[in-house]
Length: 117
Image 1: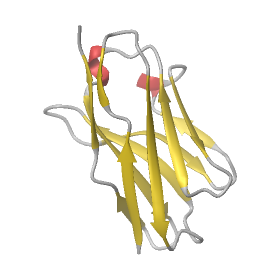
Image 2: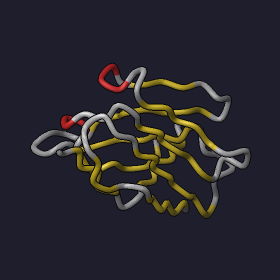
Image 3: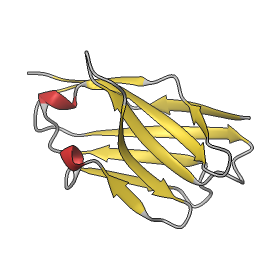
């Protein structure tokens, strides 16, 4: 079992920055990748970024060049640095740790990010 706790959401003006953090506890040794997803109002949850244990990163087209995913040396914490934020980035952001061998995703409770002037 893996438990995830996100933090760092909030209200920021367009063009601003936020850094989300997600701390994992439990059995993370067999985790394949750490991901950030978001669910915008009225839309389905979507993958924003992911980082594999080998350090490979992947981003949704909508956030490329603005968001950066990273993890600490122990891989129990994953970050999402969000710069040049836009109103359309408003969403609940969810951290997920994935075990691809079993198709398992563990989810955090989500953190609200609101971009508004």
